[in-house]
Length: 590
Image (cartoon, rainbow, N blue to C red; front, top):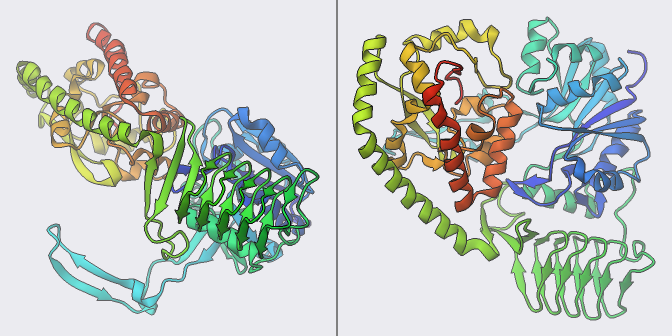
C-alpha cells in the first residue's frame, strides 16, 4: 500500500439512542456537538489523513432528506447507502463492497468523536503487513476501583480482593469503532448474512493466518454511547479541551442568521454556541458551556445554564434550566425549573422526561437514569399491573385445563425416546436476571453434542442456530413443535414471574453477544412465551428480522399489542395440529 486510503466508511445506524433512549430521529453522526453535526469533526480528522470520499451506511430511507441535509457542509465527496434491514457492522460493509474499488479503506463508527493523527495508525498498518488494524483506547481504572467483594449466592462474603494495578490481567484496551482494512477483508465476510466486525472478524482473520493488529489511540477519543458521553463531548469542544480543523465552535454573535435575534438585554456568558435563527429575548441568560440550536426561542427572563438545547426547542418565560438536555421541538413552559433533566419529544405524543439521580456529568461515568413518560406514566403502571394479573390468571387456568394433556405428553415422550420428560435451560429474564426455562423435551438427549456436528448446515446467521428439518427432533417432538405444545411447561415460569405471556423470547446471554444494543433493549421488558418474532417471522432465518421484531415490540408495547400477539399466535399455530409433519425447527435460540 503506497498511498493513503482515500475512502472511509462511516457506519451509521437508525435513530440516535443514548442509554437506550431515542434522543433524535436522525443517526448519532448528526448529533449536535457545539452546534455542529458530529460527522463534521470526524470528516476533518479523516480529511487530514488523506480521505477524499465518505461512504455513509445508514438505515431508514424515510430520513434520507434530513441525513443528506446534515452532510451538506462536508468537504469530501460523500454517498449515503441505505439498508433494508440490519446486517451487523460486517454485513453492512459487505453490502457496500462494490463501492470500495479494491483499495484499502477506513471504517469508523458514526458516534465517534476523534482527534488524533491517523497517519501513525496508517504507518503501523503498513509496517505490520496485516489485513486489519483496530483502533483502541486504554482504560484507566483507579486503584481503589479495583477492589472487589467475593460472595456466595446468599450474599455471605468470602473475601474482599484489593489487587494492585500491576496484578490486573484483563486487557485494558477498548475498541472504539475505528478500523483500517485491506480489501481482502471483504472476502472473509459472508454475503447476505448478519456479521459483526468485533465478535466474528478477528476469529476469521486468525483462522486465515492474518491476525488483526491493535493500534492504541494517543489523542482525543470519545464514543457516544451514553448521556455522559454526549454531555462531555459538548463540554470538551466548547471549553476548548480539544480543537478540530473545522474551527472553533460558533460564537453567539457570529452564528446569528439573517432571521436570528439576540436582544440587547440578553446576557451570554461564554463559552456558548448559539445557532442561526435562534431568538433570545430581553432579560434571558445563557451560561456556558451551553449550546442553543438553530431556530430555538429562549423566553424573557429565562436562564439556561450549562445545558444543550436542540434545534427548534422553545423555553418559556422565566424558566430555569441547569445541566439539562432539551430535545428537538420540545416546549418548556413558563416558570418551569429543571435540574439535571433531559426532556425529549415522544413519538407517541407529549414529552418524555429522563432524570439522573446524581447529575449527568458528576456520576463517575455511570448514568443512573429513571424514565418517566409524562403523559403516560399512570397508563404504563396500570398496564404492567394488568399484564401481571393476566399472566397469573392465564397460566393458572392453562395448567388446570391442560393438566390431563400434560400427563399424556409426558407418557408419550417417555415411550418415544430415552431421557427426561422436561428440558430446562438457563435463559435471561428482565435486566439479565437468569432463570431456568422449562419445555417438554422434543430432541434426543445428546442434542447439544450433535449441535457442533450440525453447525456446518446451520440455516441462519448471527448467533442463532436453526435447521428447518432438524435431525435431532424426535417423532413426538415433531408433533410438539408443530403445535407448540412443547411450550406448555412455561406456564410454571409465568406463574413464578420469570416469563410473561407476551414479550421477546428469552435467550442465553451468549446468544445476544453480537448486538449489545438489541440485547439491552430486549432485556428492559419481561421475556414472553410468545412474541412478535414468533407470529411474523418464525420460519424465517434472518437474525436481522429477530432484531427488528424485538425492538418494534419494546418500543410499542401496550395491552392491545399483547392481545393482538396472543390472538395471532393462536391463529398461526393451531393449524399445526393438522400439519405437524411438514416443518420443524432446531431448538437453538428459540
